[in-house]
Length: 383
Image 1 (cartoon, rainbow, N blue to C red):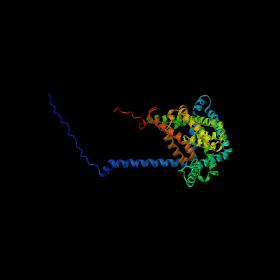
Image 2: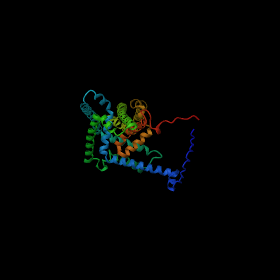
Image 3: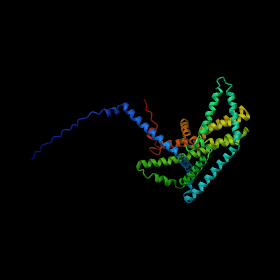
Image 4: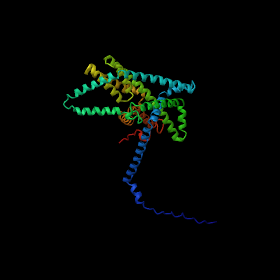
């Protein structure tokens, strides 16, 4: 019998711990954590400011690309129906010509109608404003004339300073540079739109090549959600704008308000700016009605605008645009303010669809129907 000696387990090696240095200890407490987070926030803000500055410097390129993406998303269902039936190039040419002819014709007709009666429209609005100011001056708490003149000057400066991009300087609004930038941007938009319609899925597949695994699935969801959101938003907004214009226009014609046709077209155009556009169109129509028909005509016009907007917001928008695209009014106001400050009127038009796309991306960040972790609804625990 062989006896083996049982070996004892080796004693654990004790590594002497070193106290943290003073520098590490200074960053590990609460104040140090706040400092780290502050530096990170500053870095993010600087990065965002740099991106915004770069986009504003390249507005003549960025804006046409965004508009081309929006139009491509709006007409993607038509293109998806045409692709299997006729060659892709022919389908793209047919759809692009139809877009240019239809949209260009509508815009030209509206601009021509408004422009032909713009002087009368402006004079009526100015007379209405003068009547409102005269009524305000009769109130016991009426502002002074100097204050009113200051407010009007500020409003005029804001409207005249509204740019269609950083490339449009305030001193060259009617200059050759503006025309050249517009023509360049329009041609670029048409060219980019052609390739988006023709090779949109192939272009997106090429851009997805660097991604793998979970990141690849997430980017595919983001692309699909972006196209669906932009398309639904544009088609829904156009339908809502048409209904607004028809409803308010019928009221203006029934009341025999002068300049009813250009006012109806203005309502349609301004309806693409949520909340603010409908309000501005209603105010303009009420001012014209005030000059011609008196206070009761203006009141009836305001009532018509309110009723149409309520029907649109509560019944029409949810059906045409879906609940998923419905942003809170406060979010829309913030988006409109930021867009107007950055790019004027065009920024106000593009701000809401971009905000809707951003929220849609958050909704599919972790799955087809799974929002990002921080955006999920929290379950209430029973006490």
